[in-house]
Image (tube, rainbow, N blue to C red):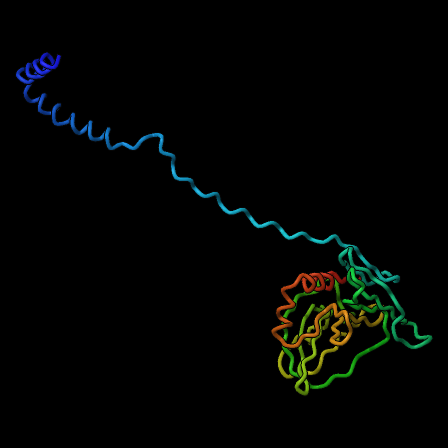
Length: 238
């Protein structure tokens, strides 16, 4: 059989020399190509799956508190609570303030807001003020048309720092050497005041008494800060 095959090849070479040269030179190339081709059984390299999108933060359920006169309201986490008490005022004065105090689930007091006060101003002294955070408070407007703003500030006087976080008149958000803050707002039903309760001496201490400005800035990254800021931005006067 081998001899027969060789004879056939040689016969073909004599009949068509040009075509046979091409065929012979191409044949090894095809053979080499087939030998070099990778096996189809080799698995393809795995492509890593894209990272999963981070889960959206869970927003706490909210409740709404409204003062008995129907004017000032705000929203707060449903695990917190609100109690009211009579604020300071003059007997027989038509404006008798009511104070609402917001506490967390442990009963620690976090925030205070009063409505219907008879105050018309407050005293001030020289301080140096730095503003850590501020934002419009769209639900509040004073009787003269001023739009209050949320702010978190620190004031230095006599070498000591005092921290304030409230919805206040924009003049309290001017930085540098200024007059000390006054968070009294003049509303249609009398004066209103609000503040986060910073307390460095009472335990448990719900809002930290800051040992440094850096500590105050670190607190701004916590969930408690975000919840208190959201509460104050929800303040509304009707």
